[in-house]
Amino acid sequence: MQPICDDFFKEVDETVDPSPEEINRCVRSYLDAVRAYLLGLHDEQPSGRIVNNQHADLTDQLIRKLFRITEERYFRHFPRLDVRFAIVSVGGYGRRELSLASDIDLLFLYQGKVNPYIETMTEAISHRLWDAKLELGIATRTLSDCLRIGKSDLPTMTSYLDARPLIGDSELAAELDRNVRAWIERHRRRFIEGKLREQEERRLRSGESLFLLQPNLRESIGGLRDYQTALWIGRATEWEISKLDDLPPHGFIDANELRTLRTALDFLWRARNELHRSGRKNDQLHFEAQEHLTRYLGFQGTRTLLPIEEFMRSYYLHARVVQHSSARIIDHALGF
Image 1 (tube, helix red, strand yellow):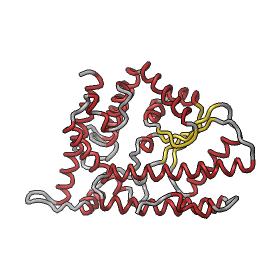
Image 2: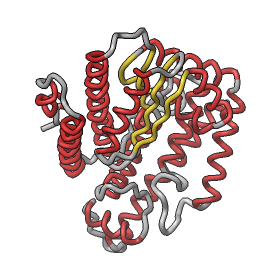
Image 3: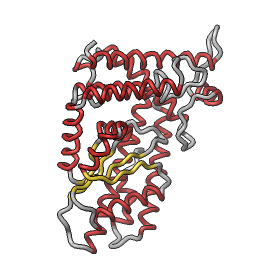
Image 4: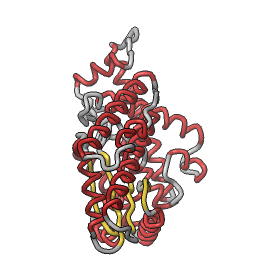
């Protein structure tokens, strides 16, 4: 059964002034239940995408709960202030593509000067998550900070494309979205050329062939980063594109290609989640990982292929789909 965050915080909710230790204990209990639930879902569910989406949604529940608890505790001791503050998920978490050991990337967004409220909210929530041993990527910035840093750092600007507001000042988060959109529209060519340059550099690092002996599920040709790059470039030309289902209505791929691409991505995400089962972020299909995934995914071999060869053949076929679909999306964005 899917865990409900509030159920794990009943003791805290019923206490006038719960201690940090009590809150931390509830956080750990909830995350233990989330992990057990996700592993069960992963084992019974062939779609890695569904597991990732559920992981993001259950993490959302925790972030919102910690926000409310922290804010309530703060205003119990200090007067209410008119503070503009929001928590925004970015990166893979923002896209709801949160594999089992992926980083939780958060943007603490505020307007004005840093004050005790903002310091308390950011520090308390961060420490609760760190105490639970989550891998975090955290930035605390104003709107102007976001644009200033993003203009000089393409990965940071790209992470804002995936921004998804979680709680707090929704208009502030919407303002970030408008500002990023305006910058992308003014610098579309620069952004696209930068993403294509990143892709080329990544291929030089990780290998320029689809058929590597030990490919990386994320970085190699036909890996998840190829699809993500295509989606970012697609969004730079059509802002409404933020997920797979948005591609056919705008002519980037057709419905049949979408189904094939979704199947390929589900395979990659499921394989990645199994590599993340240990709690460590590992995306490399080294030989030991290939043997494990062959057994886990039930490959039996054929008359002409050993089980591990059948698994790798399946991987290469799915990776080729991601490679070709991503190239088609990018070509459409560039007008080819």
